[in-house]
Length: 194
Image (tube, rainbow, N blue to C red; front, top):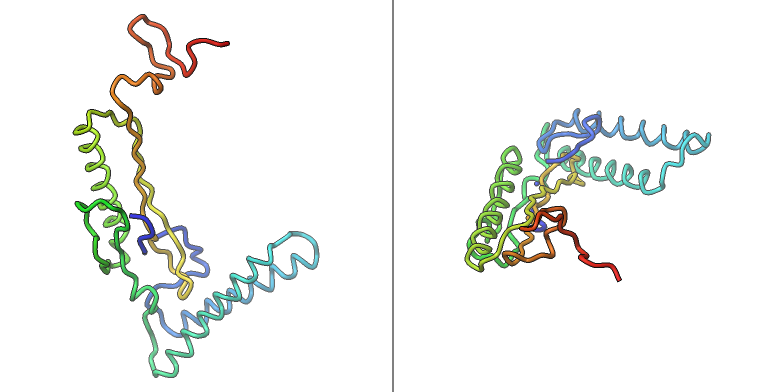
């Protein structure tokens, strides 16, 4: 499920929920501004080479939070949901017609990781069945769940999933590295050296 949009390694010091109060957002902005000032002092004192990209990311985050805050104030709301998180949809981009999420679907952020993982295991099972039909053997399979940080609210979310399957024809010697053959010899990529 490449490029599926939603949990990740969030910096809890600066993260807020998709639905937050004005005071939550104001507190995060203050902490971000304090962190930015700390980074600038470190740069000036040569204690650290904080990349300019890090400072630009903090500035962008502050700008997004200030925009969200001003929108809440203009609408007279004390709390509000992040529009980006609210509108996040998940859709499979593979050419496998037999899996879920072929059309864009909304998933609650608390269940997104389980839903994406379940979807990726559909690919695992279908790839295993395809290998069996084609007389192949599965050599390696892995599922990776990708994560991101919402640029608007800073909440972590599942941003996608990826399934990798490697198969080989049965009895293909190229994948016998480190395994004993019928004669008790250890297999390798090269049987002879020129």
